[in-house]
Amino acid sequence: MMPVLSVRGLKVSIRTDEGMAEILDDVGLELERGRILGVVGESGCGKSTLIRAIMGILPRGATIDRGEVWFEGENLLAFSEAELNDQVRSSRIGFIPQDPLLALNPVFKVGTQMLEVMRWHAPDAKDPTGPRGGARRKAHVARLVGLLRRMQVPDPETALERYPHQFSGGQRQRLLIAAALACAPGLVIADEPTTALDVTTQHQILLLLRELVAEFGISLMFVTHDFGVVAELCDDLCVIYAGQTVEKGPVQAILEAPSHPYTRALLACHPDRATTFLGIPGSVPSPLARPPGCLFAPRCTDARTLCLAGRPPQGLAPSGAEVRCVQFA
Image 1: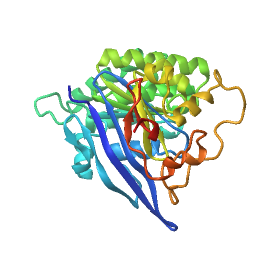
Image 2: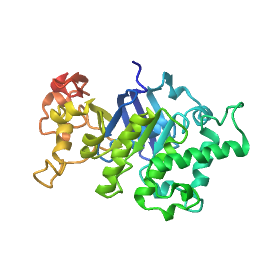
Image 3: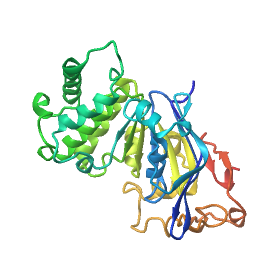
Image 4: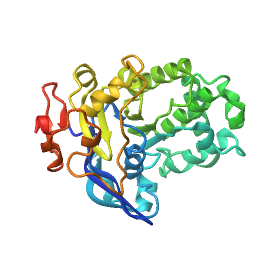
Protein backbone atom coordinates (compact mmCIF):
# COMPACT_ATOMS: atom_id res chain seq x y z
CA MET A 1 0.00 0.00 0.00
CA MET A 2 1.30 3.46 -0.94
CA PRO A 3 1.97 5.68 2.11
CA VAL A 4 -0.15 8.82 2.46
CA LEU A 5 3.02 10.82 3.15
CA SER A 6 6.59 9.92 2.23
CA VAL A 7 9.54 12.26 2.82
CA ARG A 8 12.71 11.06 1.10
CA GLY A 9 16.23 12.39 1.61
CA LEU A 10 15.06 15.93 2.37
CA LYS A 11 17.74 18.58 2.78
CA VAL A 12 16.88 22.21 3.57
CA SER A 13 19.32 25.11 3.98
CA ILE A 14 18.70 28.72 5.00
CA ARG A 15 20.92 31.62 4.00
CA THR A 16 22.11 33.67 7.01
CA ASP A 17 24.59 36.50 7.55
CA GLU A 18 27.08 33.89 8.79
CA GLY A 19 26.60 31.57 5.80
CA MET A 20 24.33 28.69 4.79
CA ALA A 21 22.72 26.91 7.71
CA GLU A 22 21.91 23.24 7.10
CA ILE A 23 18.61 22.85 8.97
CA LEU A 24 17.59 19.48 7.51
CA ASP A 25 20.03 16.94 6.13
CA ASP A 26 18.63 13.65 4.83
CA VAL A 27 15.29 13.43 6.64
CA GLY A 28 13.11 10.49 5.69
CA LEU A 29 9.79 9.21 7.04
CA GLU A 30 6.62 7.46 5.94
CA LEU A 31 3.06 7.69 7.21
CA GLU A 32 0.52 5.01 6.34
CA ARG A 33 -3.18 5.73 5.90
CA GLY A 34 -5.14 5.67 9.13
CA ARG A 35 -2.03 5.65 11.34
CA ILE A 36 -0.44 8.16 13.71
CA LEU A 37 3.23 9.01 13.25
CA GLY A 38 5.11 10.70 16.08
CA VAL A 39 8.07 12.92 15.17
CA VAL A 40 10.36 13.45 18.17
CA GLY A 41 13.49 15.50 18.82
CA GLU A 42 14.98 18.26 20.93
CA SER A 43 14.41 21.93 20.19
CA GLY A 44 16.61 22.94 17.27
CA CYS A 45 16.53 19.53 15.58
CA GLY A 46 14.46 20.72 12.61
CA LYS A 47 10.95 19.52 13.44
CA SER A 48 9.26 22.84 12.60
CA THR A 49 11.30 23.21 9.40
CA LEU A 50 10.16 19.73 8.37
CA ILE A 51 6.53 20.79 8.80
CA ARG A 52 7.14 23.97 6.82
CA ALA A 53 8.81 22.04 4.01
CA ILE A 54 5.86 19.65 3.75
CA MET A 55 3.35 22.51 3.75
CA GLY A 56 5.44 24.63 1.37
CA ILE A 57 5.75 27.56 3.78
CA LEU A 58 9.50 27.77 4.29
CA PRO A 59 10.80 31.23 5.24
CA ARG A 60 12.43 33.55 2.74
CA GLY A 61 16.05 32.55 2.15
CA ALA A 62 15.36 28.85 2.61
CA THR A 63 16.13 26.42 -0.20
CA ILE A 64 15.37 22.75 -0.67
CA ASP A 65 18.70 21.36 -1.86
CA ARG A 66 17.46 17.85 -2.52
CA GLY A 67 14.79 15.34 -1.61
CA GLU A 68 11.14 14.63 -2.27
CA VAL A 69 7.87 15.06 -0.38
CA TRP A 70 5.26 12.65 -1.75
CA PHE A 71 1.65 13.06 -0.67
CA GLU A 72 -1.07 10.79 -2.05
CA GLY A 73 1.12 9.94 -5.04
CA GLU A 74 2.19 13.51 -5.89
CA ASN A 75 5.51 15.23 -5.20
CA LEU A 76 4.56 18.41 -3.36
CA LEU A 77 7.93 19.99 -4.12
CA ALA A 78 6.86 20.17 -7.78
CA PHE A 79 3.79 22.27 -6.90
CA SER A 80 3.74 26.04 -7.32
CA GLU A 81 2.65 28.32 -4.48
CA ALA A 82 -0.72 28.83 -6.15
CA GLU A 83 -1.22 25.07 -6.62
CA LEU A 84 -0.40 24.39 -2.96
CA ASN A 85 -2.93 27.00 -1.86
CA ASP A 86 -5.57 25.80 -4.28
CA GLN A 87 -5.15 22.03 -4.06
CA VAL A 88 -3.35 21.06 -0.83
CA ARG A 89 -3.38 23.40 2.17
CA SER A 90 -6.45 22.99 4.38
CA SER A 91 -8.31 21.04 1.69
CA ARG A 92 -6.06 17.92 1.72
CA ILE A 93 -3.60 18.65 4.55
CA GLY A 94 -4.95 20.17 7.75
CA PHE A 95 -2.75 21.80 10.38
CA ILE A 96 -3.06 22.12 14.18
CA PRO A 97 -0.61 24.76 15.50
CA GLN A 98 1.14 24.72 18.84
CA ASP A 99 -0.33 27.88 20.38
CA PRO A 100 -4.08 28.32 19.79
CA LEU A 101 -4.13 31.82 21.24
CA LEU A 102 -1.59 33.05 18.69
CA ALA A 103 -3.19 31.10 15.84
CA LEU A 104 -6.60 32.73 16.28
CA ASN A 105 -7.06 36.41 15.44
CA PRO A 106 -8.35 38.14 18.62
CA VAL A 107 -10.41 40.78 16.77
CA PHE A 108 -12.56 38.40 14.72
CA LYS A 109 -15.18 35.97 15.90
CA VAL A 110 -14.23 32.31 15.80
CA GLY A 111 -16.95 31.56 13.24
CA THR A 112 -15.73 34.28 10.89
CA GLN A 113 -12.23 32.81 10.84
CA MET A 114 -13.27 29.19 10.42
CA LEU A 115 -15.88 29.91 7.76
CA GLU A 116 -13.36 31.89 5.72
CA VAL A 117 -11.17 28.77 5.49
CA MET A 118 -14.13 26.65 4.45
CA ARG A 119 -15.21 29.22 1.89
CA TRP A 120 -12.04 28.58 -0.12
CA HIS A 121 -11.03 25.03 0.80
CA ALA A 122 -14.12 22.97 1.69
CA PRO A 123 -14.89 20.05 -0.65
CA ASP A 124 -17.84 21.97 -2.15
CA ALA A 125 -15.92 25.25 -2.55
CA LYS A 126 -15.24 24.61 -6.24
CA ASP A 127 -18.23 22.42 -7.01
CA PRO A 128 -20.37 24.25 -9.59
CA THR A 129 -23.26 21.82 -9.04
CA GLY A 130 -23.43 22.26 -5.25
CA PRO A 131 -25.23 24.88 -3.17
CA ARG A 132 -24.06 28.46 -3.53
CA GLY A 133 -24.20 31.71 -1.60
CA GLY A 134 -26.26 31.59 1.56
CA ALA A 135 -27.13 27.92 1.17
CA ARG A 136 -23.45 26.95 1.02
CA ARG A 137 -22.64 29.09 4.04
CA LYS A 138 -25.50 27.52 5.97
CA ALA A 139 -24.14 24.07 5.16
CA HIS A 140 -20.67 25.13 6.33
CA VAL A 141 -22.07 26.48 9.60
CA ALA A 142 -23.94 23.22 10.17
CA ARG A 143 -20.74 21.21 9.61
CA LEU A 144 -18.77 23.42 12.00
CA VAL A 145 -21.42 23.19 14.72
CA GLY A 146 -21.39 19.40 14.33
CA LEU A 147 -17.60 19.32 14.60
CA LEU A 148 -17.59 21.57 17.66
CA ARG A 149 -20.15 19.32 19.29
CA ARG A 150 -17.93 16.32 18.50
CA MET A 151 -14.97 18.22 20.00
CA GLN A 152 -17.03 18.72 23.18
CA VAL A 153 -16.91 22.50 22.93
CA PRO A 154 -19.56 23.89 25.32
CA ASP A 155 -22.68 25.36 23.70
CA PRO A 156 -21.51 24.74 20.10
CA GLU A 157 -24.53 26.53 18.58
CA THR A 158 -23.32 29.90 19.90
CA ALA A 159 -19.56 29.20 19.96
CA LEU A 160 -19.07 30.54 16.43
CA GLU A 161 -20.34 33.96 17.58
CA ARG A 162 -17.75 34.24 20.35
CA TYR A 163 -14.20 35.64 20.29
CA PRO A 164 -11.06 33.56 21.02
CA HIS A 165 -10.50 35.14 24.45
CA GLN A 166 -13.89 33.84 25.57
CA PHE A 167 -12.61 30.25 25.49
CA SER A 168 -10.18 28.43 27.77
CA GLY A 169 -6.86 27.12 26.45
CA GLY A 170 -8.18 23.59 26.06
CA GLN A 171 -11.33 24.83 24.31
CA ARG A 172 -9.26 26.93 21.89
CA GLN A 173 -7.22 23.87 21.01
CA ARG A 174 -10.44 21.97 20.31
CA LEU A 175 -11.52 24.82 18.04
CA LEU A 176 -8.32 24.46 16.03
CA ILE A 177 -8.74 20.69 15.77
CA ALA A 178 -12.24 21.32 14.39
CA ALA A 179 -10.82 23.89 11.96
CA ALA A 180 -8.18 21.38 10.77
CA LEU A 181 -10.92 18.81 10.06
CA ALA A 182 -13.48 21.23 8.62
CA CYS A 183 -12.42 20.77 4.99
CA ALA A 184 -12.16 16.95 5.25
CA PRO A 185 -8.38 16.55 4.69
CA GLY A 186 -6.71 13.17 4.36
CA LEU A 187 -3.71 14.19 6.47
CA VAL A 188 -3.49 16.37 9.57
CA ILE A 189 -0.17 17.71 10.89
CA ALA A 190 -0.12 18.65 14.59
CA ASP A 191 2.76 20.79 15.86
CA GLU A 192 3.04 20.05 19.60
CA PRO A 193 -0.63 20.97 20.16
CA THR A 194 -0.71 19.88 23.82
CA THR A 195 2.49 21.58 25.06
CA ALA A 196 0.75 24.56 26.69
CA LEU A 197 -2.05 22.50 28.29
CA ASP A 198 -2.31 21.03 31.78
CA VAL A 199 -1.92 17.26 32.04
CA THR A 200 -5.65 16.56 32.46
CA THR A 201 -6.62 18.60 29.40
CA GLN A 202 -3.66 17.14 27.49
CA HIS A 203 -4.90 13.61 28.16
CA GLN A 204 -8.40 14.53 26.96
CA ILE A 205 -7.03 16.05 23.73
CA LEU A 206 -4.88 12.99 23.02
CA LEU A 207 -7.81 10.63 23.49
CA LEU A 208 -9.90 12.85 21.23
CA LEU A 209 -7.25 12.86 18.49
CA ARG A 210 -6.97 9.07 18.50
CA GLU A 211 -10.76 8.75 18.26
CA LEU A 212 -10.89 11.25 15.39
CA VAL A 213 -8.23 9.41 13.36
CA ALA A 214 -10.37 6.27 13.44
CA GLU A 215 -13.69 8.09 13.02
CA PHE A 216 -12.70 10.31 10.09
CA GLY A 217 -10.24 7.90 8.46
CA ILE A 218 -7.40 10.42 8.46
CA SER A 219 -3.66 10.07 8.98
CA LEU A 220 -1.98 12.13 11.70
CA MET A 221 1.60 13.38 11.91
CA PHE A 222 2.15 14.43 15.52
CA VAL A 223 5.27 16.50 16.25
CA THR A 224 6.35 16.52 19.89
CA HIS A 225 9.29 16.33 22.28
CA ASP A 226 7.42 14.18 24.82
CA PHE A 227 7.86 10.40 24.69
CA GLY A 228 4.95 10.05 27.12
CA VAL A 229 2.65 11.55 24.50
CA VAL A 230 4.16 9.30 21.83
CA ALA A 231 3.58 6.18 23.91
CA GLU A 232 -0.05 7.14 24.54
CA LEU A 233 -1.00 8.29 21.05
CA CYS A 234 1.25 7.11 18.22
CA ASP A 235 1.55 3.95 16.13
CA ASP A 236 4.91 4.74 14.52
CA LEU A 237 7.87 6.90 15.50
CA CYS A 238 10.50 8.98 13.72
CA VAL A 239 13.34 10.36 15.87
CA ILE A 240 15.12 13.41 14.43
CA TYR A 241 18.47 14.78 15.57
CA ALA A 242 20.28 17.79 14.08
CA GLY A 243 18.15 17.63 10.95
CA GLN A 244 18.61 13.89 10.35
CA THR A 245 16.33 10.91 10.87
CA VAL A 246 18.27 8.72 13.30
CA GLU A 247 15.66 6.04 14.12
CA LYS A 248 12.22 5.15 12.80
CA GLY A 249 9.84 2.26 13.16
CA PRO A 250 6.87 1.00 15.21
CA VAL A 251 6.48 2.86 18.51
CA GLN A 252 6.26 -0.21 20.72
CA ALA A 253 9.39 -1.78 19.25
CA ILE A 254 11.44 1.40 19.71
CA LEU A 255 10.20 2.12 23.23
CA GLU A 256 10.93 -1.43 24.35
CA ALA A 257 14.34 -1.65 22.64
CA PRO A 258 15.68 1.76 21.53
CA SER A 259 18.69 1.24 19.30
CA HIS A 260 20.19 4.65 18.50
CA PRO A 261 22.19 6.21 21.37
CA TYR A 262 20.21 9.44 20.95
CA THR A 263 16.88 7.66 21.28
CA ARG A 264 18.13 5.90 24.43
CA ALA A 265 19.38 9.22 25.84
CA LEU A 266 16.06 10.95 25.13
CA LEU A 267 14.11 8.16 26.80
CA ALA A 268 16.44 8.29 29.81
CA CYS A 269 15.49 11.98 30.23
CA HIS A 270 11.79 11.19 30.64
CA PRO A 271 10.63 11.78 34.27
CA ASP A 272 9.49 8.15 34.55
CA ARG A 273 13.00 6.90 33.75
CA ALA A 274 15.38 9.72 34.70
CA THR A 275 17.70 9.13 37.67
CA THR A 276 19.35 12.59 37.57
CA PHE A 277 18.54 16.11 36.38
CA LEU A 278 21.56 16.29 34.06
CA GLY A 279 19.81 15.37 30.81
CA ILE A 280 21.97 14.82 27.72
CA PRO A 281 25.41 16.48 28.01
CA GLY A 282 26.20 19.10 25.38
CA SER A 283 23.78 20.60 22.89
CA VAL A 284 22.48 20.13 19.36
CA PRO A 285 25.28 21.21 16.96
CA SER A 286 24.89 24.51 15.15
CA PRO A 287 23.50 24.17 11.61
CA LEU A 288 26.30 26.51 10.56
CA ALA A 289 29.05 24.17 11.77
CA ARG A 290 28.13 20.50 11.68
CA PRO A 291 30.76 18.16 13.18
CA PRO A 292 32.43 15.56 10.97
CA GLY A 293 31.07 12.04 10.98
CA CYS A 294 28.04 11.15 13.08
CA LEU A 295 26.29 14.33 14.24
CA PHE A 296 25.55 12.84 17.67
CA ALA A 297 29.11 11.63 18.25
CA PRO A 298 30.23 14.67 20.35
CA ARG A 299 27.47 13.86 22.89
CA CYS A 300 27.43 10.07 22.56
CA THR A 301 28.79 7.86 25.35
CA ASP A 302 29.24 5.01 22.83
CA ALA A 303 31.23 7.06 20.29
CA ARG A 304 34.26 5.39 18.71
CA THR A 305 36.83 6.37 16.08
CA LEU A 306 34.69 4.92 13.28
CA CYS A 307 31.91 7.38 14.20
CA LEU A 308 34.08 10.30 13.06
CA ALA A 309 34.99 8.80 9.69
CA GLY A 310 31.81 9.86 7.90
CA ARG A 311 28.06 10.15 8.10
CA PRO A 312 26.71 6.71 9.13
CA PRO A 313 24.23 5.07 6.74
CA GLN A 314 20.84 3.67 7.69
CA GLY A 315 20.89 0.16 9.09
CA LEU A 316 18.36 -2.27 10.51
CA ALA A 317 18.22 -2.91 14.27
CA PRO A 318 17.08 -6.23 15.81
CA SER A 319 13.83 -4.47 16.80
CA GLY A 320 13.07 -3.90 13.11
CA ALA A 321 13.66 -0.15 13.35
CA GLU A 322 15.79 1.70 10.79
CA VAL A 323 18.76 3.26 12.60
CA ARG A 324 21.46 5.69 11.48
CA CYS A 325 24.40 4.35 13.49
CA VAL A 326 27.67 2.55 12.71
CA GLN A 327 26.62 -0.21 15.11
CA PHE A 328 23.95 -1.30 12.60
CA ALA A 329 25.58 -0.31 9.30
